[in-house]
Amino acid sequence: MTKPLEGVKIIDFTHVQAGPACTQLLAWFGADVIKVERPGSGDVTRNQLRDIPDADALYFTMLNSNKKSLTLDTKKPEGKEVLEKLIRESDVLVENFGPGALDRMGFSWERLNELNPKMIVASVKGFSDGHHYDDLKVYENVAQCAGGAASTTGFWDGPPTISAAALGDSNTGMHLAIGILTALLGRDKTGKGQKVAVSMQDSVLNLCRVKLRDQQRLERVGYLEEYPQYPHGEFSDVVPRGGNAGGGGQPGWVLKCKGWETDPNAYIYFTIQGHAWEPICKALGKPEWINDPAYKTAEARQPHIFEIFGTIEAWLSDKTKFEAVDILRKFDIPCAPVLTMKELANDPSLRASGTIVEVPHKKRGSYLTVGSPIKFSDMKPEVTASPLLGEHTDEVLAGLGYSKQDIFNLREIKAV
Ligand code: COA
Image (cartoon, rainbow, N blue to C red; front, top):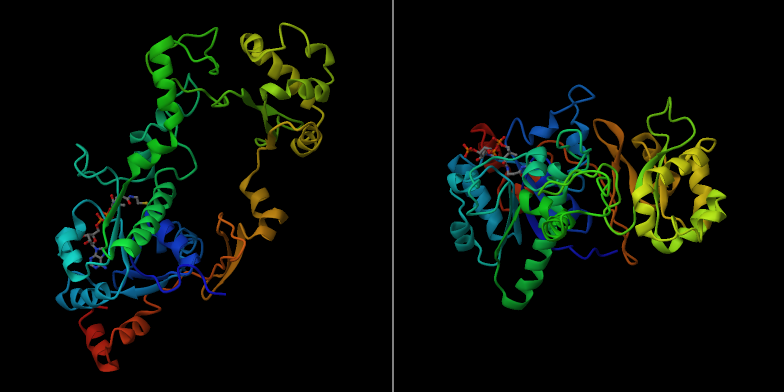
């Protein structure tokens, strides 16, 4: 089956998570992604949090599937020459080095554009160009703090909290992938490449836009009625942390199920969707609440919402999280069990859909990874193993016209 991005050649100059997540996605969809890595060491994640001595760490394998690996010292003149050749015949270069690193290497946007005016140059940085922090190096948690996620996540009586979801890293990579695909479509019309830049701060903030909504509401009316602080607590002039409250017009909370005393994940998320109040009362065996003025509307319920959650928890006390969801789904109530990584790894539905995949690897044996979360009717993205360091160096160099002797010489001077 021909994949939509087949024929698109990408120089993957990325490392750690934000950039690799982007190029991995493009590789799944058929792009020829050549990961350029420093000879001898490669992407730092190959060695980080290793679980098997001398084999690439899962951190690396789970972000670099379907790619080729070319080792190249791009600070040596001979390495630069190879990179220039590659640039001349590639469609996209993706990088997420620290600020200014690419310029210092001699590959500014102007130079890249001169070498290949059709090439799209895509970058991830911590902050956008011209921002007063644009000289900062940034990792995941720094971005979550800078983008508004940390100040609005967690409980009101605790410190700002980091989410386990990679809002700064993989999320930024996904934004960059959208930018690259847009620029490729644009190039079809104009024949020209362009620079695509995404900052981690902006990408986090984009996902926190409802909190910016709340800031403006708070400034206008002084309170936020869907937050646990309303109506009994106090509001300051900034959006507070709302614990597990539902973010929109549907109040919700994480509720205890049978076994919560010993199992830290024996919980469900329960949502009180306004128009589903009647089925909720029926499911809970509380038909008297349906027309009771103290319960009938969302407004009437909010002052005693935690008492309502308490009643639901009493109902849940003899049901496991899975039993509870099986009952509630029949009443069309939006809810889910709080699933652990172990449960997700073994979930037959996720295995069947290709969201959790087992990938054979030359050195590790097989490992689990998250496959494409995007499903297509005409294509099933196939996940293949991440490359060993420099696995495709000879192949890529031969494709650029280097002879066996040339490659030997480049190896002798450690340029590849
Ligand atoms: N050959 C020779 N040199 C290479 C090379 C290669 N193949 N690949 C990288 N390098 C060099 C770069 O030129 C740079 O050298 P310089 O600083 O002397 O100019 C150096 O290696 C790497 O720089 P940098 O990217 O700053 O690495 P770091 O480990 O100090 O910082 C980050 C890591 C992630 C903090 C930083 O890259 C960053 O802020 N990136 C942008 C934001 C981002 O993506 N962060 C999230 C990552 S998940």
